[in-house]
Length: 172
Image (cartoon, rainbow, N blue to C red; front, side, top):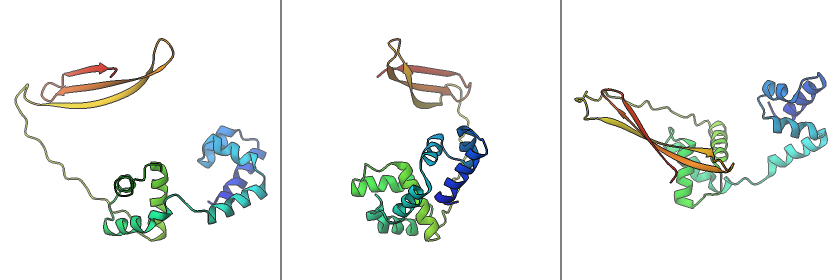
């Protein structure tokens, strides 16, 4: 569904008495997008859509490189393309979601389906108790007693044989 059709659908649902959250769910939009559609009149939406068709996009200068990468490596993810743009062209100001949507459009326009390669898993031999463990790291943002935000880091260990767990939390 195009943007003009979505605009019409949002306004029609609003006239039928649906609330913002219900419209957002029915149209699979965020509530802020629903508010934006409701604030615009039809001529503004048509003008906006025409502008979207002709504007220069942030990733257009890298289009040929991205196409070459996608043709050479059909299993390439948008995240990997984002990493390559940062490494090879020092592109750091473009968000991951922008790269994802641009790659999706390239794949659709040039009929470059993503091939999925299955990972091969192999069982690890069972070791005697106390000889193997798994380690993982994590972080979470919590509120302090002064109502400020602070990042807290964790390292967690799980013994493979007994499944006993241990974790250490640090604020640095």
